[in-house]
Amino acid sequence: MNFFRRSPYLFKRLCDRLRVWKFSRYEVVFMRVLFAFVIYQTMPLGKPFSTLTQDLFPAINPAISSKEKNESLRPPLPPIVELLPNSSQRMTFDSQPVPNGIAHWVDLTFFSNDRFVALLPWIVIPAILLYASGIGLPITLPLLTFISIGSRTLSNSQGAINHGFQLVSAILLVQTGVILFGVIYRLIKKKHFVDSRQRTIRDYYIYSTILLCVSFYMIAGYIKLIKSDGEWIQNSPYIGIQLVKTDRQNYYTNMDGKHFGKAKVRWASDMLEHPNFTRVFMACGLCLELFAFIALFGRAWCAVTGLMILAFHQLNDSIMGLMFYHNEKIVWIFLVNIPFWIVMLNRRIRKDPALIPLLSDESEDEIEASPA
Image (cartoon, rainbow, N blue to C red; front, side, top):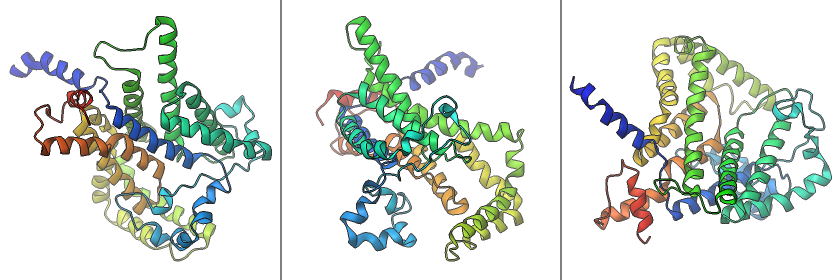
């Protein structure tokens, strides 16, 4: 009975937790600059941008060509090669044999046109620099969004789908929507958007990014249940068969016996030999996806959930060879958010009286109101 009497209060507390957080200026700058770097890495600029590190620093070529050295920072970070300032390869597709998404209505093969490829850096690099500085977001964000979605849609219209760039494109799309809403609001109301809790567009476009990241993992979990008719955990040991098939396919693609036919095959064998242990293990990952929304309960919940997602990615990489390095970088930037915790730790060490419990989003208000 006590629970039912308190339930309205508990529900109100839950709703308070799920409201948009306040973000300090230093957080937004940090997130924007690092995400700008990730955007650059995903842009299909081709040479010399895709080989920039090799061209400028020949001494690190061995580190780039060696898989073992590439993984010297892993865990907790992605491999070294994924942290270097290289863009993606240019698009080389001159047709859309299996249209995907907007390719049903738009011919995107111009992304492979030599003249457009030569012009692309002159568009992308200034746009990324402006995005990182926070200048001209209503122009730079739609531009970067179109290039990201358009180029990756062309790649996904060749008969195979790659999800490695999906989260980057989705974040750009969501941030574009929030920023354009702010512009439209200002044009109509003749003032900047500020809600009843003094949250601005800056807070909304960062919080919407965190919300999108959480949604991505939740959707992945629910799709597993829907597509398997609720039997995903029961059938999870058979993933071992897919691991063997993927490993053999990679071997015949690269003819590299050093890195294929060993660890992942052993994992596959263990999964099939110990089905119940596999079900428990895989259920942990599924539950992490299904309950990723706990990241929205506060800053501490967000950071812990982010670290768990990073561990989840690295296990998937080592066991199944599923690599989502851009997703990992995004989780580090927006969910873990190290600069926030450095500032909070500094304030705790100084025993700042303005510091209040970390599980509440009100702590950001205090930081915003005080000097860094």
